Image (cartoon, rainbow, N blue to C red; front, side):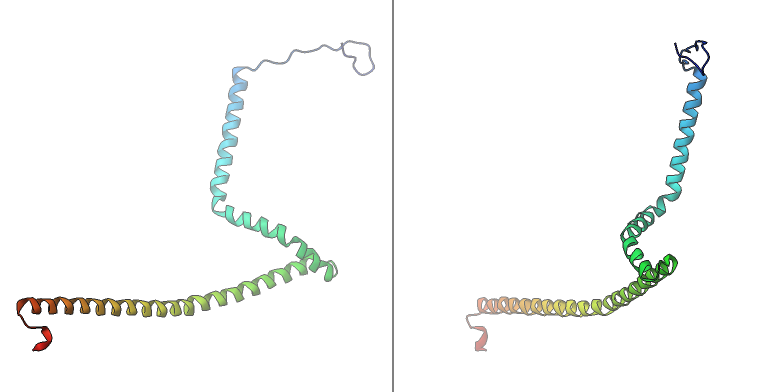
Length: 152
């Protein structure tokens, strides 16, 4: 028996409630609503999951740099954020310029090299076919007559 708040009256111990059918249905409805809400949230945010993962990765990795820049600027967190974003944009822009250059001129150089290779292999194949056809013709001429092909 348990003793309550200073009085000597014994507290009644209650038996645990047994689940009823209405409690079970109530729980099932709540679970179904929570599951459908989770599915809806996943459906809505699924196009942005990669972006969210990358933003978390960048936030965790750039936090020390942000704190270092903020310390150098006298604990100005906002200015440190602006400087890091501008620096990232400048770096990204320079990478885009290099990528564009490589895409335009690199592919042209590669195509030029590929054209030379194609032309070389085509010329070699034509020379080879011509040599084979000359051999075949010379053999026919020799077989058709008793003379050699060079004799006239």
